[in-house]
Structures are given as C-alpha cells and as structure tokens.
Length: 78
Image: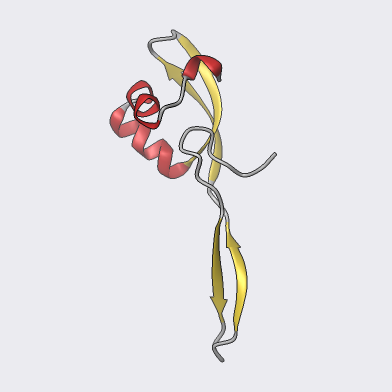
C-alpha cells in the first residue's frame, strides 16, 4: 500500500540531504500518515481512513463533511 493520504492525496516529496561538506544526496520526505476512525455526521457512521496529520488538523477545524466536499471526495465510497 502506497503512502498516500486518502482525503487530500498528499504524497512523498523529493528533496536533498545536504552534508556539512555540502555533498547533496537525494532523500524522500514521507507523509506523516495516521490510521484514524472518524465520525461522519451525515452518514451516521464511523469511517476508518489513513490521513496525514496536516489533513487531520484541518478536519478538526472545518469538519469532516465540509473538508471532503471542498476536496471533492465522496465519503460514501470510503
């Protein structure tokens, strides 16, 4: 299973690790994914999804249903 947020779709980022002698090597910055059980008010049920912590923070601010609609995700299919 790939490390992708199920709601926002965030993936890993390619970056460079720079040493003290300024030798640059490629590194992969992974997304901080958490498996969470969230209550979906309109569907009246629990939804278990893998989401990033940044998305989780936004859901706590906006609400699950409004965030899913803004991103364009249908929660009934999850």
